Amino acid sequence: MGPIVNKEILSQLVQLKVSGRLAHAYVFVGPKGIGKYETAMALAQRVNCLKKSMDMVACDCASCHKIAGANHPDIMVIEKPEDKTGISIDQIRVLMQRLEYRAMEASVKFAVIKNAELIHEAAANAFLKTLEEPRPGTVFILTTAVPDALLLTIRSRCQMVRFPVMANLALAELLKSQHEVNSDDAVVLAAFGQGSPGRALELGQDFLDRRCVVLDAFLGMGDTENFVKVAGVDRDTAREALNIVLMACRDALFIKAGGLDKIVNRDRQVEIRRFAERHMPEDLALYADRVSDAIRRIDGNQNVKVVLTVVREMLVS
Image (tube, rainbow, N blue to C red; front, side):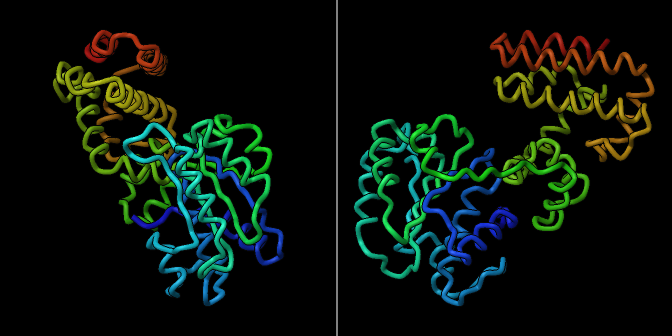
């Protein structure tokens, strides 16, 4: 999978650097998988490119190569260790010490903090001192999906850059053109990726396979008891299965209304059409409402097996 870079945001920041107006600190805000970290690293590459390449084409110079390989001495990345609950004050202290030294190779040093909402309070207060007295030639980029979790004093000293989610059609086209996903699968992954390229790609073939099992049960071609067994593994699995059922209900409604271009499960269009033909539009709308209610009950910590059994009864009625 290639890097997910928001080229529009990257271009705007590069132009700010060219005009001498690049700020010393930014917060990149957006959902997981939207390309916040990748765009931050791409900016570090473009700013420090030895060939002064300011276009969006990947460069093969030593600086760009090191940054791409995460081994450039002046490009620092801080993130939560796998065995810890957050970013510690010791990590921030090490960062502050490294920032005291003159850049070894870069024209501009970068400090990127991934998932900055995970900074512990003591660490955040220590980092605040660095933001209040920024050293020349250093750019800080914090990435987060929940900016409100950051200290207000930190947010006030950074410029916010919001990464918009992609429309389903645009995301599907990106999956096809840049990641060689076939057309039908791209539409499905885009719909369930919720506007995030990274999330859509993370779903991958495993999700597509699980979708087939759920759809077989929903469309009356599989064992509905198996639907409860497969979907009832845990709360997340149940929520995913119900969202697949909900999308199929909506596809059936679109088929009833002649909106074939809007359906998501295009590879199952024949079966969904047969399902739609057996039901009135008001029945399909009622199914969708009941499934939506089941999702809310799952989110409300109701018993997963009980909720899924109710949905199963609907499927066989």
